[in-house]
Amino acid sequence: MSETAKARAVGFNHVALEVGDIEAALAFYRRLFAFTLRSKSDTMAFIDLGDQFIALQKGRRQPADDGRHFGLVVDDKEAVRGALIEAGVPLLDGRFLDFRDPWGNRIEIVGYDNIQFTKAPNVLRGMGLTHLAKNANARQELADKGMAVE
Image (cartoon, rainbow, N blue to C red; front, side, top):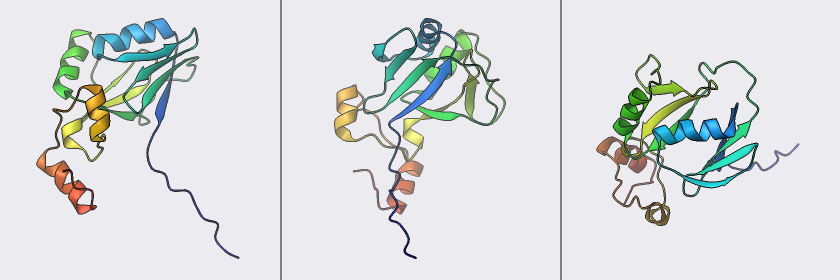
């Protein structure tokens, strides 16, 4: 019996979050982040992340997420911390910058400089983020995998 060839997972196109109300969700996230809206309807909204996006979908009915979360990469982690505090959004206990949106979606804020995830230079240019760079630890992690940042 031969093993079937398997597709290789290469990244994420988008993350979908269920929310109670599209307009309320957009208002909440606009208090925390600068973003461009790709498109919107009564039941969906798409927040542009360059070559990726976040889909907000009306219809959240489950309880708040505990461990389940996604890491949202930002250009300025401390600016998000300040916006969360200013907006009165409780920070979750732990060593990371985590919070829940009003519908219970758990989000971890991750600084671009400190992780392996790397946007292609043309995507950074298109997003107006050519100033972003990796710190020494992130550069070493990438180099160890043969993915050194130029």
